[in-house]
Amino acid sequence: MTMNRIFQWLPALAAIVVLFTAGPLFWSRDFGNYLFAFFIYIPALLFVLVGLLFWAFFEKQPKRRHSILATIAAIIASSAVVFAGEKYLGDRIAFTFWYPFHHQLVEKFSGKDAIIITWDSWGMAGMENDSYLVSNPSDTISSTDAATRWAHGHRFDCEIVDVQRMRRSLYILTTYNCPLQ
Picture 1 (spheres, rainbow, N blue to C red):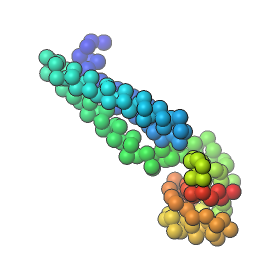
Picture 2: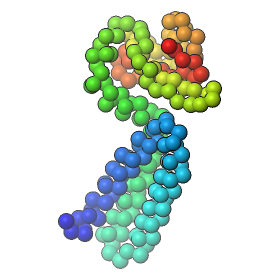
Picture 3: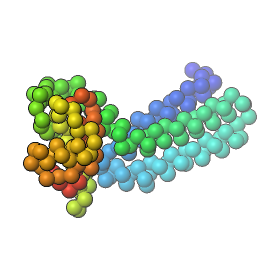
């Protein structure tokens, strides 16, 4: 592979590397990943960006300079996608991969209002969040108020702080300091 071909694919490769490393790292709820991300990953990414910027400044060939600048733009854009999508993309991507392997479990709950599984849990020292994959055949809990009413109707005295609709009649509900099970 010639050097010009490598430069041609550099922006796409950089974007893919950032998406596949930063995505799981920043969407994880693990405290160790949080520390690694903010004290190692982000400084390393900034170091790479500054290095690429200097390289672009001193590069003599215009095609290579444009490729390096495109790589910088790709890294910044893919980082923005990861950071902006942290709240919604993480669970949606996880559900997309989880569902094909667990659809039989979900089918057991079709037609029932029920908690299927504990989806996630994070936090510490009295500031815990718990999220659950729930079945709601009437498909009526798309807002936090409606989901809180749904929880109260099932004798759970919890306020729902977030609701994500994964597909028809399947939701991820998140509580704060109040487990549903």
